Image (tube, rainbow, N blue to C red; front, top):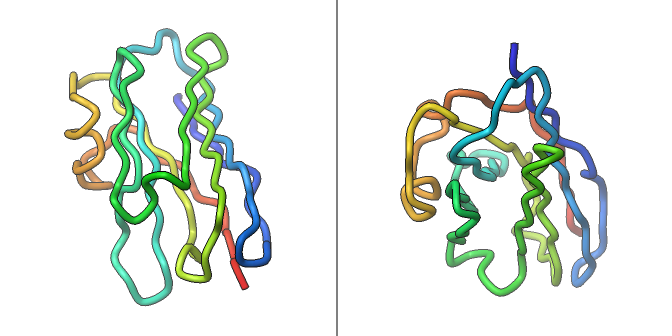
Length: 128
């Protein structure tokens, strides 16, 4: 039974930084794609980063240049380094994985949350 667990959320001042981590467990092999999503209060969940099997990464315009994703295949972790945080980055952040489909990074970025095979429970980020 595959599980994704996010960690690292918290409260931070505007302009600050935070690094989230997504750890996968219960897997036998890791192939394709992962992604980070976020959902702000009253808004739809949006994809902010997509990662393909080769490690290529696509970012949403709203986070490009400020957020950086790094993936460790051996540990099956996906980190999200967030810099220059803004109040509008306040949201619940989620990771997702799909190891059955082959997607490009842009496809992983724009895929719907419900389309991912495995989905985490989220970690809260609050920027004031």
